[in-house]
Picture 1 (spheres, rainbow, N blue to C red):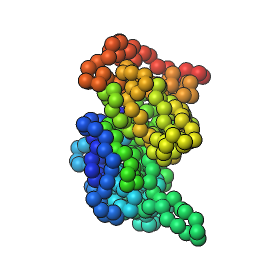
Picture 2: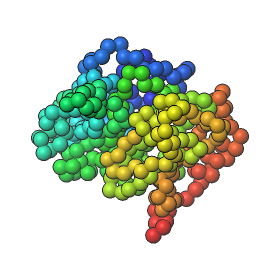
Picture 3: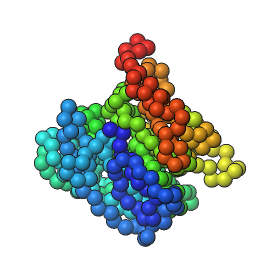
Picture 4: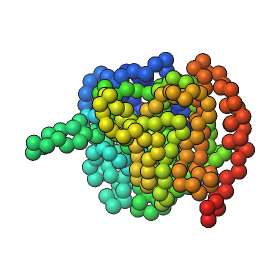
Length: 321
């Protein structure tokens, strides 16, 4: 399902998961203290139909898995419980870890069926070395299996073992709604249109997208009628910031990025597409919709008709061939 979205607008770093819900207003994140250790238990489970997912409690696994969030300087300890009959693991991008937490068979770092293992991920702020500034951990990252099927986790990724990892910096603005979008081979979150659930927001709400690429196919991510800035946050630092604004970006295997937009800003409510802009990919089912409701949550004029057209549309996996 198009999950991995969560309520935000909180005043301290959290680990979040579930469907997108709105808070009253966005807030600036201010951690209560720096450098804390956050612990979470993640359960890997079989979902049926050859699909697998991660969840924060037994029986709650989803595709994508829960969004994991920390602040720069925090340590995240993940207790991974393998409730499947397959070898699997959890491997992060963008953070620090030692070989025991690598999540790869190369380093004998994985879970056998029915076992529990702790993975430790550390983050840091930008720092100076040899008179130069080195980057910190803040960014929109991701995690995934690295052991199912082969030593690179190809089977686990194909089956849905992946999710978003966000490392925030103090002062980052938090969203009111949050959605994870994963282009995995020729699917969006392991589904194709019109079987991709509709995501929603009310006009004027701040919405965060985390975009992730997996599989063996090259893609581009396009969002209709909204744009963001091509940097870490997706926002300008001021009116003189010359960072390019974009509404389309490559989303290839291993890539991840994120951004925030104001729903319907300058364009109004309605049903807006997001999709891969490789033409035969979108025609083949890599296309989904974002419903921006009126500010009061009511349905905009023409929106139900657009949703009906989306649900009735037949996609061809052979288009363009």
